[in-house]
Structures are given as structure tokens and as C-alpha cells.
Image (cartoon, rainbow, N blue to C red; front, side, top):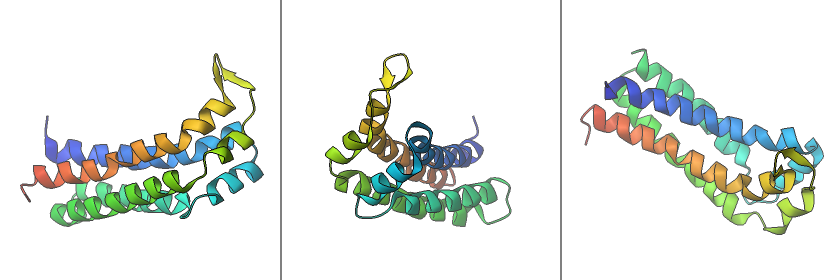
Length: 146
């Protein structure tokens, strides 16, 4: 496996996954509820989503040699850390009762309900967002930058 190619590919997938996780609440509750849910934390998680989209571009540019791979790896680490810190700060500052107030017990798939999805959503976002700086670090390591 060529780490010089696999690391930015992981960065692209991880950054895209952050955006996908941000869209999930829109699929289970109405948009007004999602707006209050995303507004309950100190930073908005959409800032993390915006940085994740920029990370997709950076990792793809490094992968296709449209920018210096060392620069792309460094920017991937930096933006990845910003994505992770914003997502984590938001997850920690959202009051625990907010997702539960918005959720219902309507089943989605099997035992999975909207309550379960919204209860764990913020922590899943934080966990997924950590993959972005990890991919940037792996990319930098593959390029022997440290």
C-alpha cells in the first residue's frame, strides 16, 4: 500500500464523512429543530463542515499533484485540527437535554429511533472529525516531514 496515496484518500473520505454526518439530523427531524439543535452549542458545527470541505480540496490537490504534497499535508493537519476542535467544542457545549427535546420515539430502522440518532449524533461527529487530522498526520508522515 502506497501511503503517499492512501493518506490523502483517507483525508478526502474523512472530510466528506464529516459533511455527511452534519446532514443526518435533517433526515430524521424537521429543519427548524435542526437549526435550534445546531444553534445550541457555542460554535456552529457548520464551521467544521466548511473547513472539512476545504480539506477535501486540499487533500485532492495533494493527491493529484496540483499543489505541493508537503503543503497539502501541512494544510491537511492544520485544517483537520480546526475541524476536530470545532466539532468537539460544539459537542461539549450542547446541553444534553436539547437533542432529547427535539427527538421522538418514531422508529427509523429496527430499534433505531430519532431519539437515539440525535442523542449520539454530536459524539459521532466529534469522533469522525478526528479522522481528518489523523489523515493529515499520516500524509505528513508518509512524506517524511516528521
